[in-house]
Length: 190
Image (tube, rainbow, N blue to C red; front, side, top):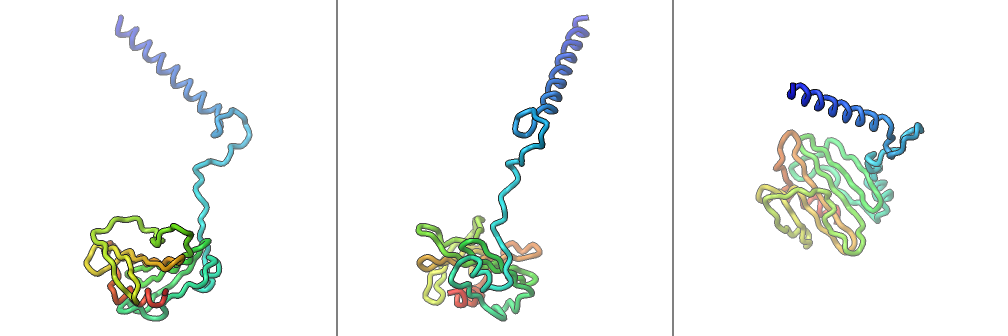
């Protein structure tokens, strides 16, 4: 008889708690009040996309408010000619994505405020190797997983920064740009 009484009491307690939770959930709005007005917008809606599309490098530079966004034209070393190039910008930064079919290269140029880092790549991964190359008498920071192939590259002069991020498509997570490939981009962008 004692076991039956304990089970009955436990069942009643669970039912009361469940009823209370259901009642509370049905009575409150996302803001915590019990009004029947439409709920306020959720604070988890996310941030607005700061990027705008552009038709050309010149339009991306103008939209970003930077002096120029110079890019290589035609073939890129032994990568050939890109299948597609897309441009976009946000306040202070222009970007181009080169689609080569098996790989993608994203380049950026930005105007910096005092104290900002030259690393405008947006790539926060850790790589097995980090080194500096000198291209056109400029020190260029490189990072990648293979000797001599940079996945993330960046450099700057005064208040202008540049970056190049290489991405292998189809599962090649170690794809990087050789010095010859980097030179084509760096010389066009300086």
